[in-house]
Image 1: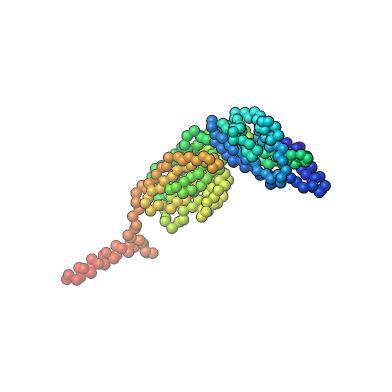
Image 2: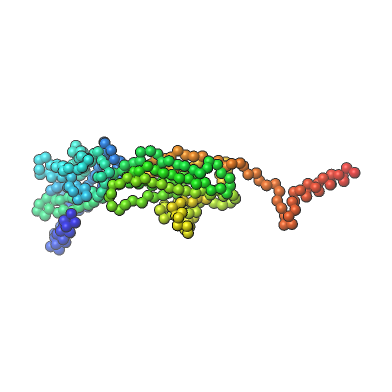
Length: 315
């Protein structure tokens, strides 16, 4: 395929130098970035082009440089299908502009190419490609565990979110009161090994004692590549804890907040864990006394003064 493309480019350069005019242009390919696997699941791949009045010679579709569908209008029938392991081509919805693949499985992930050739005398040819991932989602919802179901101000609550194996490995997003606070992005192999992998994320939520601090993300590891606005990120010197997300929270006015995690794969799979509700142990009443610089209690002194005055008035 690479040698074929090189030859095509060389031919194009020689033809243009000779003063020729191309009859094939504006080739574009439309392939879904991801589809779900399983019986009945399908993917429609489209190819658009402009022949500038020339006749079409052929359309060829490749997966990983192996041809699986061909459309040649001069032949009868014009369509030809080649083996595609584990899947099939729906000829009723395939023609010179698109091809529909049904019964997708993850081993069909990879680059797909559309090759268009104009008819004689020049047989101009061009190729475009795009990636497609066939997703095997996790079987169950994410599993969320927390270190404690209540808090006092100054506490640190630890939570773990685990997701079953899937292809590719899911990302994990943390929601606090349905607001995104952090995301762990799973590592993905650059090579297509088709191996299912699970996902795991940890977060520590620090409950502030004072209320004038602003809610925000205070730490994230290198695996977190999405940082939400108004959050402050800093580096952590402890390499053993580099994969733990840390979040600082101002105590809610009602003393309760919810926490859950969401597993996502591209834009075709998203599933939440059951939320957990974390309540404050006990309310903290505002102090009615405060010490002055000499250590005496002003409110007590005021009470003593009022009592003395009332006694003098009764005499």
